[in-house]
Length: 181
Image (cartoon, rainbow, N blue to C red; front, side, top):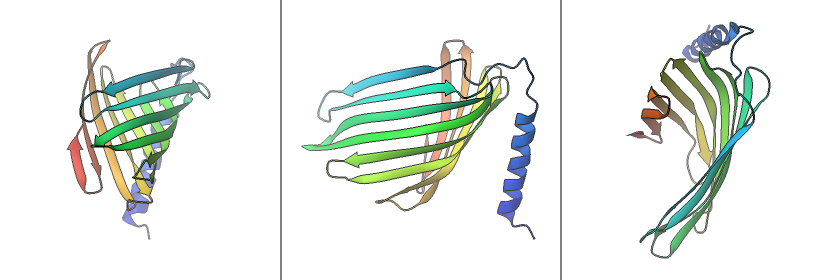
């Protein structure tokens, strides 16, 4: 006898196989070529902080890619309290730019200077592309030495009114908290 979770996983696997199955020889690559981005940001005032984030993406084959992410930050959380943040993550995925994306994700974040916490996340991600509209979702498990293991969900709807303008609305849920993103 199948449990409801087994049925859901079976349906998800069937949907993923049928979604990924019809790749034409003329389809666009998952990743056009190795590329990266780097962002430096900071805040001045009573609660100073700075951060550097980056991503590097490479094609693994025509329809598969890998993205590596990183963050280093120092945040003033009030008074003389500061928190150092170091983190890394990955996305391994199948992608057809005319259809969507399916992949697995994982991340690790270390909080230092008084908090001394390690947080891990792992899960699955997916996206559906329809012209100038896309719908993205990621779901998985968060765990760490100062938090209880819990499920998380993040969704994001995006619309491109022009090639260089992206309007987004998202929703996130984790540890009994939800928010618009």
